[in-house]
Amino acid sequence: MISLPPSERDLHAYIDHQLLESDRRVLETWLAAHPDVAAQVHAWQQDAQLLRASLSGALQQPANPDLDPALIRQRLKRQSRRHLATAALLLIAVSVGGLGGWQAREATEYAAIQPMTDAMQAYRLFAQDGIMPADYSVQGNGTMQAWLDRYFNQAHRLPDMSQSGFQPVSGRLLTTDQGAAAMVVYEDSQGRKISFYIRPPGPQNNFLPRGSRTADGLQAEYWSGAGYNYAMVSPVGQPTTQMLKF
Image (cartoon, rainbow, N blue to C red; front, side):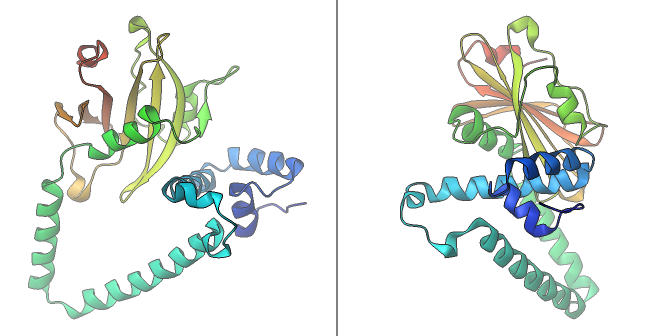
């Protein structure tokens, strides 16, 4: 039986589906009361899911202990600590002028990134291809807004697309360099899907003016407010495209 608060080993065992059913229920009850830890666990789950997807067919081969998600996360954590130490030494070594030049270059690189590219990538991966299970699915008395409020309680409300026949059906927690993000998938009776995406602003606190762009068959309508950036994404050329211009 696990002890509370759970150890890191217990959390990794939960992510890797190694806990007994009774322990899993106990841990999920505890996580519901500790949203900060729950957000970290969801981020680890996302890392593990993306790892499994990238390995794809390789996972069908005989088990390789070097590919164990828990061990990989531990190696990445050690590498991250080394990188932080290196970065600290660099900050001490550079002059004020050099540091200013570095920051200017970083800001220029960010400006070259098209707005809400990650929202479109998330749509392709989770809504279009549907290769990952959801972190939350609407069922019973639960609502998607209540799930989202656990992590973004100061953000704008979910757009109401019910008049167009779309209802939120599933959600996923994601990670960005600036912090936690999330995507909510809407679906209509014909199986068509659109998504709502929320994330923190980028470097230099970059908020977005209301805008629209298309790329690789997808259209994103984006805006900012209440401390976050948002996007609604759908395939180009479907009736849903004009619907998103609200």
